[in-house]
Length: 319
Image (spheres, rainbow, N blue to C red):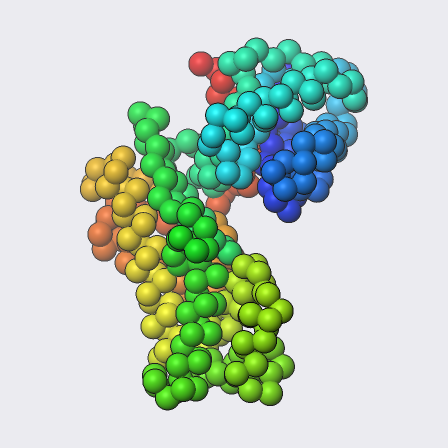
């Protein structure tokens, strides 16, 4: 019997699933990061190999494992040069002997794609719909029945990332400082930030953000303070959340308008930390989007991205 591999290669970890022809996951393995632009090609290769090894070992298959297709979903893949690097990595995996694996791959059975596509396919369970990924950053990606795709956002914390945890956190700090100045109305964000960061004065934010050089992830981790304030009824915090939702709806609507019709029946899968906020961002987003597109259903992921990668790999064997 032959199998396929689906791999989700991210900046923090790598996940691999081994799937059979019936879409059943037989084994799942994890390893460390596999973003070659950050950790280098050799370290990326080691992570991919270990994730595959762990998945195959978890399957406890006694005979030789024939791999007939593979899909590697990587963050930021889009340039021809990145795709070639990924293909070379797959080639190295085939040449390197480890475990009872036999590679029976054809070029058409090797899929290299971005992480948004595998998140879409895994989240919905099919390659049609929209994924709205909102965590530290934000990106919106859709694919229709004709195979046409549309990406919105994903431009990073300086040029984009509307609705993200980073932008919510920055807006929260900005609102707190304006309140402290007397330029804007009073908000519990001042007290919330001071307590969370153990500051004597809200002015001490300057040292943290500028002098200590806080990065994007560290700043984004302050978004729950805005969330908690909004859930507690703070007017200023709720305005920040409402503005974020407007941006999320606008970007999602742009994807729908580009590759779907207004009356299309489709699903929008939401992934990322922001959707689990206490102030009901998910429910408010779904309600607002539903007013514009009544046939659209907003859901949480049914499966993980690596599962989506495996489905894309399996699809190449059935065409």
